[in-house]
Image (cartoon, rainbow, N blue to C red; front, side):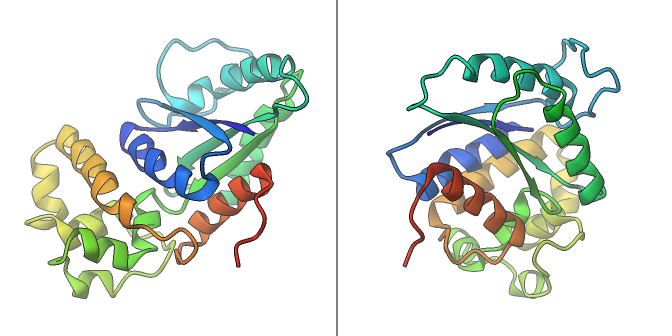
Length: 220
């Protein structure tokens, strides 16, 4: 199996570069494409946007993958995995919109959609030991108040736990600094993560989708 993974930003790419091999091993291949933000699904699904926002480009991308994958040999299947943050959207409606885009493709690629709830940092917070290993001085008072996959300002909560001065100090440095710090979290926390014990339901869904598509036997 080959996976084409679409993710909304560079920090997400860094995290998945570390996490995906932990899930699928070395038998299957993958490639990750990062974008400049999440954007919005266009009303005109046949449009051809020029920007680098993930959802703006999603119809064009899925159509292109449909054509490309249709030419792959039967013994080399491929799938698109779209990974993005739910933020404050309605999960049910958001997934419906993405599947509507997929259903508009002819030919239609194999694809799945995985949402980090609320944000990608929820997947780090699903593995508190990994955070503590990377940041031994992380504030337990902050971490212990977190409810997995809650809508609470996830990256801000992680910043409050591990960044000097918390999220307010980080935001004061500017949004470029926020993006840089998120990439640092991926590089520092990601290698410590235990994929089979993560307590984030949305991470577990992502892991299980890859395992299913790759045909990996259940771990004992």
